[in-house]
Length: 293
Length: 308
Image (cartoon, rainbow over all chains, first blue to last red):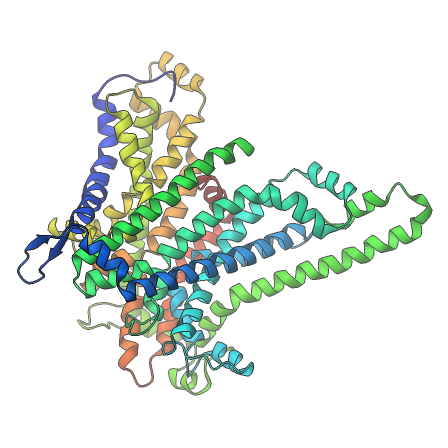
């Protein structure tokens, strides 16, 4: 905090009031409500709530469809992180190295960031469509008959590709800015010591990118969990049937379609705890990052 | 990094092998830069390809697409398709067209960006420049919102908004999304980096807290505000889950929300209107993409700075 400050009670309260009001009404209240509801079973027709303790949690985590969804989410998140971080880093390293044309490449590679996930999902539906999708033809050429929307893992594959594709520009932007932050003198010194560009990259450059990579990993995990909702919803055309759904999508399905308020809230709370842990890790890391940077 | 100048520098102290040294790096430069450009061109193809084919296909009629698949080239149906999507009323109630949805998205994007910037600046100003009772509590309450994205508390949030009678209103669409503290967090960091002497000088000149905010702090944060504004506009425009739940009246649909409607019409259709769906997708991505491309430098700066 500043050493020199204004005094007075009214001005700061006035200034902070809008934010506090919004946070209390639209954040604290719903969050508390989620925790409360998770201990009750709601009767959707009569509006009665019966206290059931941790039953909703036990039910949620032992049901086979929840476990299936959790398993899928694990694979989904891992694959998205691996693909989008991998390509993001690859493109950033190449863009950093080319002497001419960096600007145009940068623009062309980053603007997909601005596309909304459901819009990406819509394009994905088309590309993976049985009738009109060029990607289905492409994979058929290699003898893989993709049946998106029918086959569980084929649908999962299509959703993963689209969700990862959408996230590549974000990682590219951060990796590139991380690379450009590495002092030139350091690279020159490395170039004198070691002739192999690949070895220089893995022993000198990549460790210096570690803070960026770790930060991006956390962001990508958050993205894969939450922001892929739009991709999934559009690619399933709102009809999940036997198709893969992520844990966040399941909260939505059970709460809004299934009217299982208690179960949905219990799943919400489980996710909340997960995100909190992730954020704590991230905050600890931010302190370290300041130290290194 | 492994560009030729460094390799040449490494070779410099061996004049005996001068000829070979001169040739080898030149050769390596060529191959490595061919590789780099190759990878980047592949990347451009990977990132642009789907969008390009979506756009070109939207200029064909749906029967041609149904017969041959997604198409490259120019189908000649551009004007009629985009005319239909933009101006023809569709949906169950025949109340909504593309133009109205674009307008709603614009309200959402601008409202979200302006609301977020204003609310965050005020709150961050109070936190950094005032000492008051409960400041620490306020700080932690606000920053606790960073812990929980909207997606994990959608059902109770929906019920709260419903009980306030805000379903199908712009307020209900925008205000709950402002609850997250990303903007406040960022402005707090920025204000803390502003030199203390500024405030001292301003006080000597007799500026009160309001004058200091309006005449000094806000002009000082101009570029930061612009960067945050651009990012928040894109985030607001691209919202999907919240508008999907909040708006059941088609008159309030944003264009990204409208995508879901398109998909539902799709299911029963014999030959779905591929071209119109793709045209809608192109329209939905156009404004945020333009803004990001035009203000690229500011956008990247804002993104990289805020997320730190």
